[in-house]
Length: 133
Image (cartoon, rainbow, N blue to C red; front, side, top):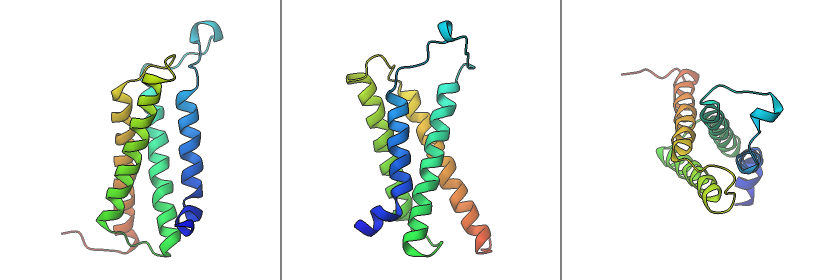
């Protein structure tokens, strides 16, 4: 278990970082003069969770010293990232009420995860020159 945690340190630190960012008060765009396009929040969630997924796969690759993967690994990553995304939204709803809890943010999180899983599987096939049926 400690071996796994050692290899997953970058993903753990990233998860803490995105949790803190998602729970911080939002930027008052009216007073600061900084404006973002509509939907920037969803794009940020997608990017955060894409990077988290890539870091989780990277830790697993380093732990096993191999690019091979099992469907169980993908299921574990899906479960971990879904739980983190849901936890962030629940915290926003119950504790950090100055933030708006939106289940569309969880959808954006899982979109980023899907992109990360797709990228890994695609690169895995290219890396080992597997034939596509």
